[in-house]
Image (cartoon, rainbow, N blue to C red; front, side, top):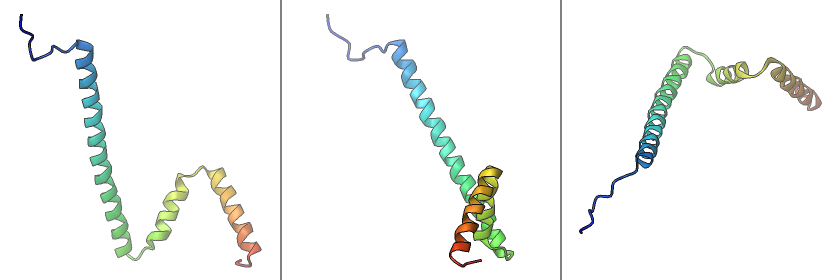
Length: 89
């Protein structure tokens, strides 16, 4: 009896392959969306710069607004203390 060159996959193996492919495709779609969103954010900063806003200050404010208010206050207090110690205030 001759053996067939095509080996029949077990259903569990086929499911695992399909699941893996689905995961990879979802990650690829999300990466593309992330790139599109990053490009959009860059465009908004360019627009702000064109309107005379300081982009570095805007980025700082966006970063600060993400922080927990208590953590932000603590960081600002430490920064102020250091700046006073260095005679910057």
